[in-house]
Image (cartoon, rainbow, N blue to C red):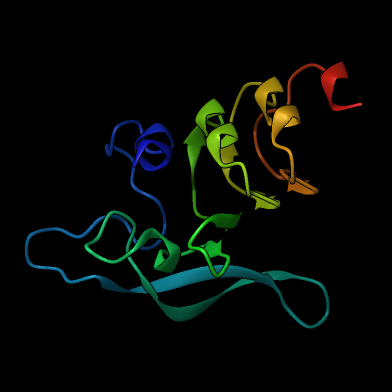
Length: 140
C-alpha cells in the first residue's frame, strides 16, 4: 500500500493502469503495459490484470511476481506514470531480485537503502525524470 500511495501523491495522481478499485469496481482491470514493438519503438499492449490494493493477494497485483512462498521477488511497473521519489521502503522486501521501474516520472536520487537488498540483482530505472547526482558508492 505504501508503494502505491508514495508513487501517486497519496492517490491524487493515479497510475496509468490498475489503480485500487473504486466502490463499483472489482479486482480485475484492463492494463496497459509498455513493451518494445517490432522495429524497436515503444508501445502499449492491453491486458487483463489485478488491481493494486484490491481484495486479491498482492502476489496477483499488476507487475508483482512472487515465489512459491508468496514472497515478492519482482516488481515490474514499466511506463505506468509512477511519480515522486522511489520509496526507500522497497528495501524491506528481502527476497526482491528484480525491480523494473523505467519510463515513469520518478524524481530525486536512487535510494542508498536498495544496496542492502540481499538478493537484488537487476534494477532498471532509465527513462525517468530523476537520477540527479551519481550512483551512490554503497552500490559498489
